[in-house]
Image (tube, helix red, strand yellow):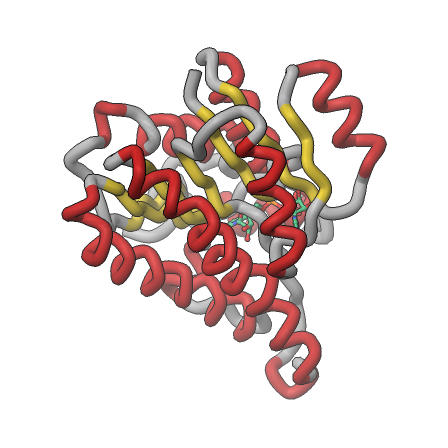
Length: 237
Ligand code: NAD
């Protein structure tokens, strides 16, 4: 049974990723930040091991891996936890900027650092980072979010080069518009306008992203590393 760590794994895209791996017989450690009630319900329903931790905090991340070690070694790490914020550039404060980079980028650095010793020992491992289409194209009124997601693409490519000889594949998924709480602020009209820009003519589902993550973590993806997978219905071609 593989050990899969999914940050932000009890809600939205992360929840769908956790469910996909559990469905296929893996053990999932779903890391969440705040909502104990949702996390406990999710654990009871699915059998996931839920761990409360702010993944931008080094001590909290160390505690996550202390829990994982009770069950064995980390096989797959999915850096999914993230925050977004809509603000015109001139309104973005230094605190906004720092929090965005702490949650969206530093978390991947900390989680990967902690997961790597097991993967190096096993001489195999898969790391999947969740970026965004806005990290590829830039999103208006989301400069800090877009910059953080572009950083994740650079992180993925550089790490893939460094870890290739260790048989550790590092890839990135850049979702387009996916129906989750992160987009709950968008009106039906705005969703309609976005749908018109998508060749496949629908908003994505968390399962669309989850199935790609599952593939990238499988043996079928052993010869794929350093890539950015646009799960976006063709919104960016
Ligand atoms: P969401 O808000 O539903 O879920 C975000 C998850 O991250 C939550 O489970 C939350 O608990 C967790 N999280 C946030 N801060 C955390 C912290 N400090 N420590 C631990 N966990 C933390 O959003 P989502 O749509 O499911 O987004 C998941 C990922 O996909 C994010 O990285 C997001 O940027 C990315 N993404 C989403 C979309 C979209 O359209 N929904 C598009 C592109 C990329």
